[in-house]
Image 1: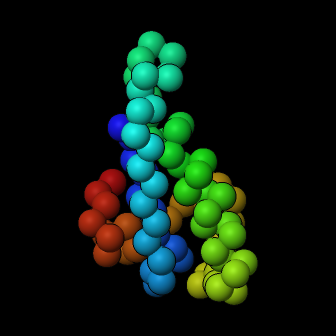
Image 2: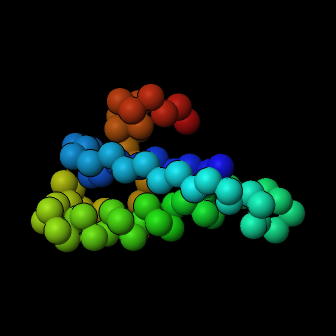
Length: 80
């Protein structure tokens, strides 16, 4: 069994989505599966549909490759 849980939008969550795939290990190469490769793609598809359906707008613009501000990371318990 593998799982992936995510929430969005990140700064002001409105949704939490959990994807659980049972039996993924028996079909994976080498008998080992990971949530990021099996369950995360399904999370992405569901999240994209819900964003459109619920008309969730970005809370703040995201620049590809930009680093998160240290204050935001600290607020969310992330240590650098």
